[in-house]
Amino acid sequence: MHGFDAIWQEYEREKMDIQVGDILKLKKQHPCGSSEWEVLRIGADFRLKCMGCGHQIMIARRQVEKNVKNVKSVSKSEEDSD
Ligand SMILES: [Zn+2]
Image (cartoon, rainbow, N blue to C red; front, side, top):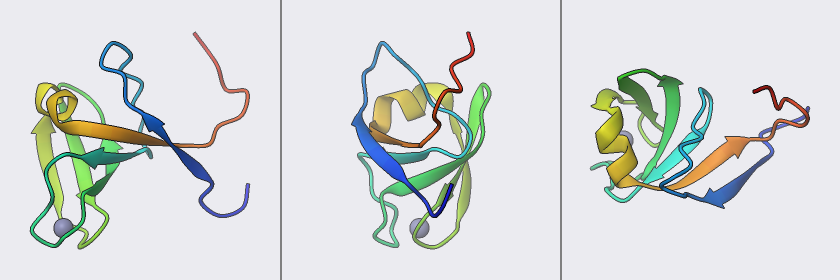
């Protein structure tokens, strides 16, 4: 693995496939101008870090699902465990 090799995937509401390390693009922009957030923790609440200014927030999963536009998954090859 070299660098940050990731692809933007169109987010499907049915398929919530967000993992720690993924980058979320939200509909709402942070005041700093960035709309990309890194996922630091997943649970009933998500902890996200703004890619623009590094600000961290806690946000309810429901809110994430409502606001996410795209998910950039850190490329994982054959790590498909069920
Ligand atoms: Zn920010």
